[in-house]
Length: 386
Image (cartoon, rainbow, N blue to C red; front, side, top):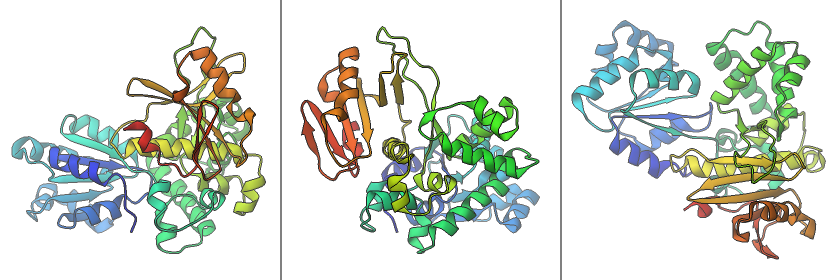
């Protein structure tokens, strides 16, 4: 059982709102977290055909069959349910009576915004952060990146290759088809692999669409679905130009490194270590760790990257608490003066203090290099945002 960092925020939300919604990718541990944190709640999953038929037949009767508060999993499968929950929240005015969860954020958020606005706390649970995984098992960086951060393979000692293959297939056959109709699944599978090829790069929708034989509009729709399902995210460019012409194209990242490795066809941690995408995969991992630190507090991560037309670039900017923190990710264990070159350029352009710059590397020690803070990959990033 992993100790999830979201737990205190989740408890606070349930004590404060009549409805709490927990979203996140399939198999990120939402059900396990809810059932272990609220063992006295009545749990039902609308993925069960029997339960779905019961609530469709008599929703009011279904919700009054117990006086216990409810955990309703995959609530988006029965949209009229949200109106009944709204009615209860408005009449009873009781905190914590309904906890909703779902892996299809696109559909769940749509129904919440239509009926439960102002009555619901919305939280997000991604797969494990390294801080949550660390007490469970000692692994190397490259083992962790290759095997990914989804909890179930670790909890049940499953072969991660088989698990990820099944995960991608299940996602294709169930979640995506619940949202839109895809005539040729092989096209979407190719689209996923090509997205993995753009992991950590500036997004090029035209190239993706042409390579898959689809329109750019379709490519954008598919990408939005992947984003709403917590498979990928777009890192937006920072808006302040600091007297420079800026690149305005977002960069594309997958939340989980294990999925990227499988889509790229990598076979082992040793192969990842020498692969051309190793730097991008390491970079995406660190950015995801920072996103998870914000999600654990119930906050949206205020993250960006910065690049100008002269080629100056910073991998990640975090605009938080009145400060702009800059991060450069380096997938090396060896420290050289070249590691801080990007931060030196950024410091000269932005005129921000040196303590706002950090290098995250593949080593194990926290160090200082000239004026810059050098952080190990295992660093607990939430300390920077407290």
